[in-house]
Image (cartoon, rainbow, N blue to C red; front, top):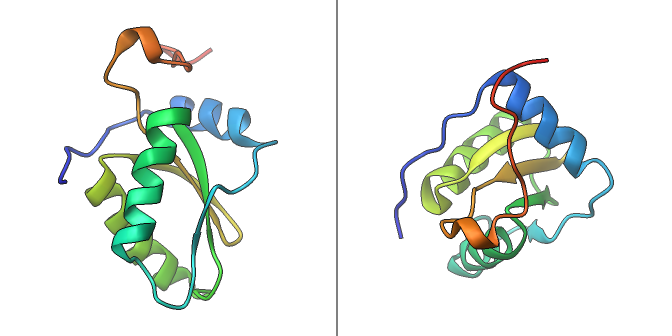
Amino acid sequence: MENRLMQLAGFQKKYLRGLAHGAKPVVYVGHQGLTDAVIRAANEALNVHELIKIKFIDFKEKSQKATLSSEIERQTGSALVGMIGHIGVFYRRHEDPERRRISLPERGR
């Protein structure tokens, strides 16, 4: 399932990183990399939570995490809002306005 990439402003990413601060990772990328199961789990978690953390267990190089993150963004239609250590924070707004949990700020404060 290929989705359009989300475009977020810097202040929106900062807001989302703040919301994700206390959350635990819900998807883990192990030595096998991005399997269908990982993408499926990320899609399901994004459908439920909109904002998720993905932990990169066996990929410690910054370039590896950047490559994997852009592939996750592409395959899930989400946006990477931040990378803290080995954990990426991803956001995808729910398609159904009734089920949206997060309302993004429209402009910087």
